[in-house]
Length: 106
Image (tube, rainbow, N blue to C red):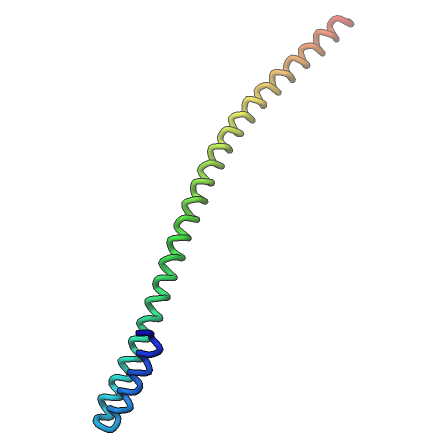
């Protein structure tokens, strides 16, 4: 039975109960309203659970990417240190060659 048909049937039953017991009809209407609210809350809860799962996946991907970038940064720092050492070596050799050339010219 579809939800629409069920609601119509509940409404008809409530109308029939109005003549018999207005308090019972009001209570059933409140119950029906509460059930609808619970269904909405359930749907929202499912949506939030899906969003949370998606966000957890996204956070994991970002963390993995961050770890990869940190490793690459460390490799680049090591390479930079090697280049600094090589640059210092070249500078020292050039300075020595200039000194030797000046001494040769004297």
